[in-house]
Image (tube, rainbow, N blue to C red; front, side, top):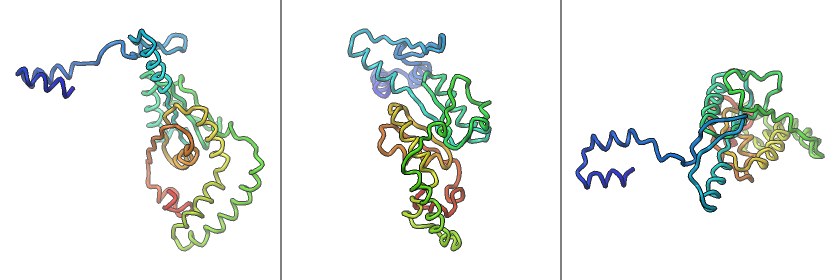
Amino acid sequence: SLACISLCIEYNISKEAIKSALYKFTGASRRFEYKGKINNASIYDDYGHHPTEIIATSKALMNKKVLMVMPVLKGGGAERVASILTNEFHKNGYACEFLLTSCNRNEVISRDLSEDVPVILLREYFKKSHTDIFYELLRPVTSLLCVPFEKAKKSAPAFFSYLSFVANYYKEINALKIFLKERETATVVTFLQPSIPLVLLAGRKTKNKIIISERGDPKRLMKHRYGYKFI
């Protein structure tokens, strides 16, 4: 657009005419243009006609995936924002999924979310592991280590904070690692605690792009149990 404006100025075209033309410009047609859905299949119109262009279009299609991650879906304000945002992605041709990290199926209230967007429960991906006993024992130990800091109203050392969080959410972290590896082309958008640290820990070795949106004060939400430094 800047090059176009510069060229117009060079030919003494008025600023009003330039502004009007840019405002009306909708982009070139048939450039991976979303046309709608038929029998649950998304239809795109693209001008690509030789192998290089077809491959480029295919890669773009594979990258049009969004995974929204929330702790619960019970009709709250942030959940409504996440639902509306996911609906907009879906309307624009993105393949969307809505993952809940801390919710059971009978607790889901998805009135704001499109019926075309699947709601997935991370708890249904939990698997038993030989490390379960270790984390079960680690949980009370880390809780005891954090008690003196809670009583003193001070942040626990980052190492204790990390151990405490992992001990409490190891099943979610392990299940989410597997889930993200199966969807490495998806962009992950996550709101609220504890979903944000879960996604960041699980996504350390995946190729997913991650966008976080903290909707509150983490110091107030997490208090002293996991430590401000960890957050």
